[in-house]
Length: 146
Image 1 (cartoon, rainbow, N blue to C red):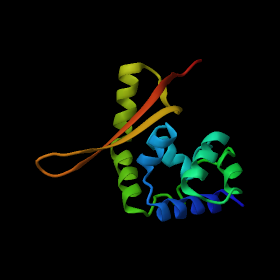
Image 2 (image 1 turned 135 degrees about the horizontal axis):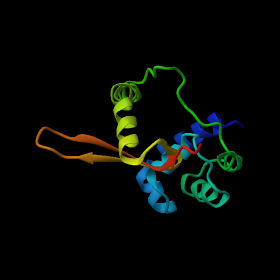
Image 3 (image 1 turned 90 degrees about the horizontal axis):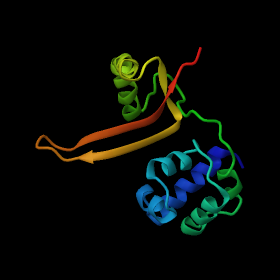
Image 4 (image 1 turned 135 degrees about the vertical axis):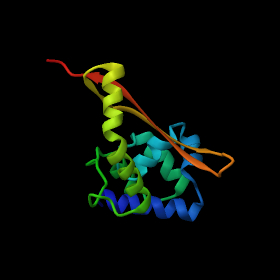
């Protein structure tokens, strides 16, 4: 069984059980964005987490060791991405990526934001104009060393 097959079995089990990512994350005691990325194949679960998930979602045992494998990260099948939601985030980075870089450099110096020591949060904000999506990228600053 490969990682994409395991991911599909987990997705089917989630759908069958009616389990959302937020609920599963709370039950496993982990961050929901991290768990969602893990279930989509971007992070490994430890053996305990994978087994807890199997018990919650009742998927086949052979999926457990696959969920614990270190994955090949990166999920865009094409650049630019074709999914409208992912494309809009890509578009926002095309427009504001250089601004983000300049402001990081102004505030922190010459370096980058880590995507390894990293947290992500997606929030719903209610406004008078309707709901808004708030995406928080929280990465450790890593200075360049020469």
